[in-house]
Amino acid sequence: MKSLFSIVIILIFLILNHSNGISQINLHWNERFNGSANYYDEGRSIVTDNSGNIYVTGFSYSLGSFEDFTTIKYNSAGVSQWTALFNGSGNSTDKALFIQTDNSGNVYVSGYSTGAGSSYDYATVKYNSAGIQQWSAVYNGQGNAIDYVTSLTTDDSGNVYVTGQSYGGFITQYDIVTIKYNTAGVQQWTSRFDGSGSSNDIGSSLSVDYSGNVIVVGQSFESNSGSYDYIIIKYNSAGEQVRISYYDGPGNGIDVATAVKTDNAGNIFVTGYSRGTSSQYDIATVKYNPEGVEQWVSRHNGAANGNDGATGLVTDNNGNVFVTGYSGISGSNYDIAVLKYDSTGVRQWLRSYTGTSNQNDSSTSIEIDNQGNICVTGFCNNTGTSKDFVTIKYNTNGTQEWLGVYNGNTNGDDVAYSAAFDQNGDVFVTGKTTVPGSTTDILTLKYSTVSGINSINNIPVNGFRLYDNYPNPFNPETNIKFSIPERSFVNLKIFDINGREVAQPVNENLQPGLYEFKFKAVDLPSGVYFYNLKTEEFTETKSMMLIK
Figure 1 (tube, one colour):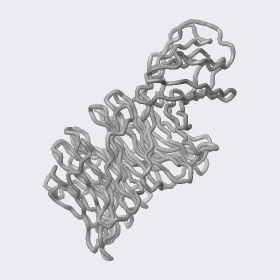
Figure 2 (figure 1 turned 60 degrees about the horizontal axis):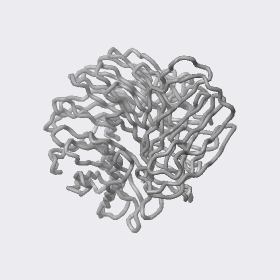
Figure 3 (figure 1 turned 30 degrees about the vertical axis):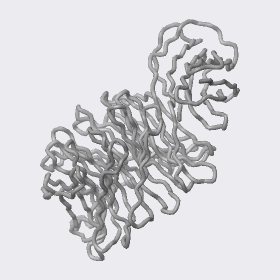
């Protein structure tokens, strides 16, 4: 179990005489899941519900069955409510990649699963709110070959939609296969698309519009251009193909759509990567009206004129479009990139982030909250710690609200794959973290924001100091206080008697001053705990006793 704590900060700025509201991010809890085989486990997708619960899906190694779908429900305090595993009929590799919930608390996960006598198949599973499996639906395409889900969505009626790629044989190669299931898991329709080039056609993402139309995007070999282009397929609610649109970039090379969203007017927004004329791949974002007519195209070529690509996009209620991915800013490496376009396709701002080791960094997910704030997550490469989780929140004007970087216990690779907001504006992230033995666990984080931190008065601070907590012993609250004499990057962590991190209240730059945090150990058992303060120039650890 993880601690649930609130933070009250008494801050004395040495350089300020007036109130100065800022926003701080705190790692509220982190939770790891290790499969029974103690091997490679990953979280791949995360969602929240209106009650503050968090749902994570991915895969974990189980004894005797290789990877299994692994779906976990946490409450808002990070306490696991249930874990559900799905092992396909082939008792081999099964990987869940996507998750959705409905208004009744049901949970839908999809990915690929090894069948008995077949290769990878589409697999979609529904659980009720208690984690009990309601049904599973498997699609095995032509010839028992590879079928691979790349996207999942649901509608307000509880229907479930998946798309991806399905091998159709030597002549057609991979085709785009899209399936609709009703709430009982009964297949309503299946649509198989084989492009004009009789080559690989791959669906990447899908969205359902306000009328129940299904929009699928990806890549298809288009005979007129002689290369792969963005493909945008529109189906009506009965699965009948309404129209097809293509986008061929100016370089007449490979163009791959990676994400799609629709708005309340039925407009379609697509992004991905596209070959430019004098550059390599660019981020290319295209808007279509409901009839499939192109409205605008906006292309982004990074300053390094290298490869740029999009991994996701979201839209707001004003018609703005936010795109994230990776972009070559300087040299041969790429950085996290976030772009905002207005409703006419004019770029409003570009933000980038690079890790300290100046290697490749990329976002993997983007989300938007009901206030129009943007959260992107992914990985950054940092000196001495390899890949780390990185999560950034921007407001609609592109101002960075906060930054969260998480390095696991081994300084190995830690990669975030998905993020989600809850109704309070808190952010949840899932991915994988390297653990001792060079295996990985599913890692899920909660970031919470504390606002309105104000200066009080000018009281001198003499040096770095970590104070004794009070009261001590405590139940269930105690105050932890420290002072810093200069602007510093401050890390405050709390560990149990076994050295397991249970909380990280502070991980950010702070102004000189005196800070006090109220730590709530409501969900922790009695015992000895340690709190460690670390800056570039100072580190100290103290102990405290929780008695319940």
